[in-house]
Image (tube, rainbow, N blue to C red; front, side, top):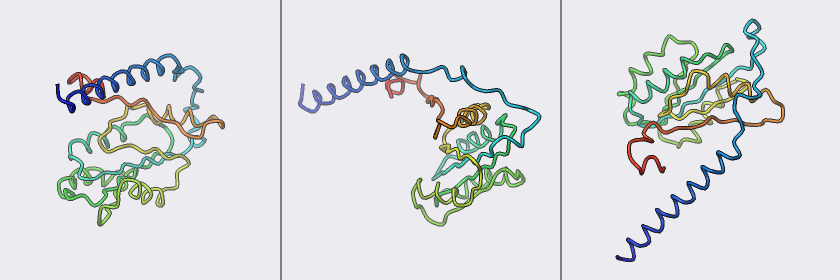
Length: 183
């Protein structure tokens, strides 16, 4: 076995071991997510915080972006929801234009087209500067979220001791191979 093959084998084995330990620790120390969530008052939706969802994208596949935006538009959150799609100077802006156009008449969705690629963080900042919601949710453009994600995160954020919350991410291709399952 060559030195490179040995190092590669050790690296993969070490990663597998660390990943297993990490997942085991998560399972042991994880709290039930729905155990202490206060119920919503469906009548008084004005008391709910407004949520701005920021979706930065760069050269995203139109089908992937459409699926992401559909999942956000399908949220069951009864409060105000505003979505900012920030195209970070993509070369395929023409290919995603039909996706942007499909939400042109949705007052909850605003598309921001940056002239050149400035990076994900600066794209997010461009949206944050235009936003005015009580809470901000960042969603990657290749992510689909369940219909109750915003409601659950808002409930967590109603606790004054909580400064940030995130959802459980699950890769859609996790069962494709042993490598995607490991990653």
